[in-house]
Image (cartoon, rainbow, N blue to C red):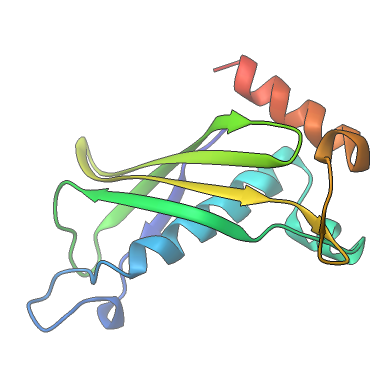
Amino acid sequence: MKPYIHVVRYYECDKMGITHHSNYIRFMEEARIDWMDQLGYGFERMEAEGVVSPVMGLSCQYKHTTTFKDEISIEVTVKEMSALKISFSYTMKVGDTVACIASSTHCFLENNRPIAIEKRFPELYQAILHQSISK
């Protein structure tokens, strides 16, 4: 999978000229959506079929600051996957410098009820497994 590239915008920086920490969560979402698109199974398709994937938890470890116009390369990998949940890891770099290491956990819901992704979307489940194994 290709890493997702985010170029830091001026409005994403605080008064000190540093990317505000809250933006990294948005960068994670952008990268995750891109990752799903690269799998060939985007969020639009899931949502059109009535399935959503809310965030259950996340964590970020900020290692190095980023600033306006920095190109952040975000590598997304599957950390864990069970019948009802999936956890992603994100490594965000500017060049060779790690700026942030993060993770997020999501479930899959249909009509506000948990669903087993393997049964509801077997193609997606297999694509995620294949991607995880090929790492």
